[in-house]
Length: 267
Image (cartoon, rainbow, N blue to C red; front, side, top):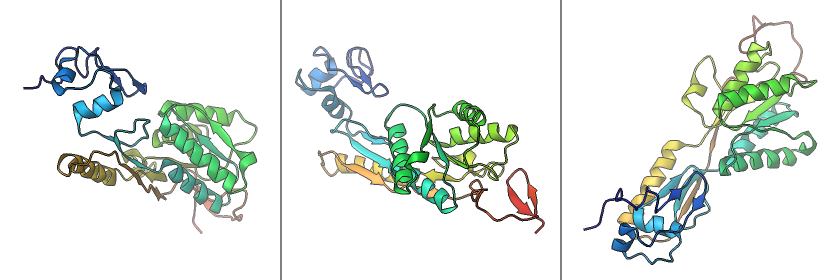
């Protein structure tokens, strides 16, 4: 009978360290009882060891360098590109990207912004504000923008939390959002759907990711599949009230404007 996973010296303890957050894949300890019971060679790399010890494993929502693991994720770069395409169609040209973190998610979304801006001939207008994936980072990004000589007409945030912090700080400073600055987020979080926020965002289709992850587990357990498989799902751009046409290109009118949402009324 195999020892449980919480056996001293085994997976989850100091001798068989798996640190996914740091992307550090340490070599296994030859004295680990669980490894010995499984008959795992002492010179086996830990990414392969993890698969053997804890099958089935599916990584959801991000890229990983390990080739032995199944991965299900959305196309983050294309999701950000869809936001840029939408804003450019509305006449925006000065579009800032508020990014966050330091992993593959940040890299993919940042790459999507850069590629889309260059594709639209806006490479010289690229502007990126670094931070993390929190509301506080969004507020800091707003302070940075407010200190500039002129505000951009749109900001594409790397997630909804950054976007909401940005939205709150700009409105508190008296900036009309989206009348003067349009904001888009990413993740289509529950907060983005609240009526007083109503944030345009990008959905990673979490239900579809979950379905694919379950299918991957079933294929491993019941179908006997051993080769790693990667699913890249199409993200979905969801338009709500936040983006508006570029204020420098839309026609003038004498309508009274609702400050909170930047939409003309009384026409």
